[in-house]
Amino acid sequence: MVRKPLHRVLRGIAGSDFAGLQAEQREAIRQAAAEIEGHDEAFAVVVADRAGTSQRLEQAQNNHRHTLDFLARWRELLVALHAEMPNDIRIKRALMGEHPMRPAAWEKQQ
Image 1 (cartoon, helix red, strand yellow):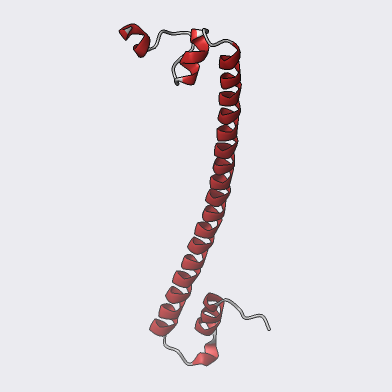
Image 2 (tube, rainbow, N blue to C red):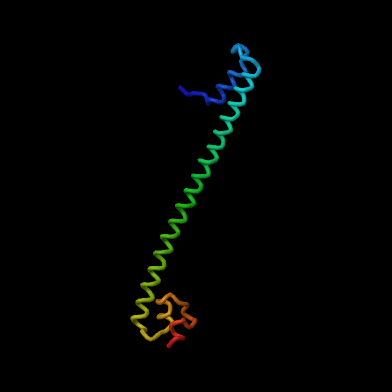
């Protein structure tokens, strides 16, 4: 059995002439129904926003993992190149985390 949402049940009670309710009571029930409906709509928006945020977070984590893998492969390549050309200062700078084409601070001290 599917139950009607509470705000619809309250609206039905407030609209019924057979309920024997006074005008103030009907208005209070209508206001309660409107408040419940508003909270339900706000909750639906929060749930949808959370789903979107979770999806964006998952994509960002996936991108981060791929970036770390990419950097690890570049480091392996630089290490292999450095083994082949140990005197190339550009490779040494890159391995030290410096820009390969600009003199590093540790070079200026020497």
